[in-house]
Length: 331
Image (cartoon, rainbow, N blue to C red; front, side, top):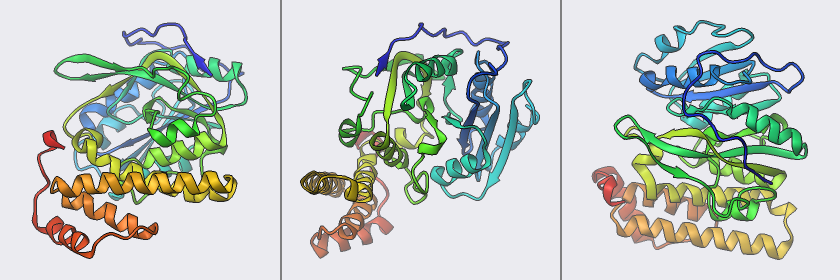
């Protein structure tokens, strides 16, 4: 289902109404790594919600900046009825950080917000309203704007057609990752076994969205309730086309995990398509001399039953150790 809600305000509210007691409680999952300069704004955008969560769990993936001090400045209860938990972890990746925060949280609904992004006031209320109208839906996500510190809001992402990533949208999710994690609200019991893959530095969320969209229907709100920050430190900004390799791995994992639940011919076709896509994306990296990422793709292809010439695998493995990554602007 696609819903157009009341247009969000771009002005943060300093005071938010308390959580409505009749609604299910929400836990906010916030991973961070060296985002001390951003994390305070993310927390404030949660506290400005007209429906406050019961808790914010910040999982720090080994930061070496002032993240801990910035979070501590809010105290353990930054607003009435809202607890703030800070978890300091060894550097293990965003998947492990999210999983650790989820394990430490208690609410039946999970809302995700990366520490460099922002919610607009009313975001949670709009999503809860939508999920109350569609009680069978397992998740809700929204449109969003891109912004940075230099330009402010400079672009937007609105799905067209709007119902592409709503309802039963597994087929669309196979083609493209159509959910921004910082916009996602989902029912805890629908998180796939193992949660976010811990061995994928990027596109780990694509795997979760594939499993989620197979298990349940979703709701898409076409109003832009999230501000998605673009900056040089951001993993997806720095790795853009390279992320396709890990998205291909996510597709293969999901299809293989779901194979027993798919009709035989459908499972075979999806597996072949995912394998072919990963092959093409891996060789795109190889021919661009991006040997580190080509090596990742070649290893995954072999694990999933697709062989590649030994000379290509060897060259990628050796050059990945010796050659710098190509310029991000070209890849």
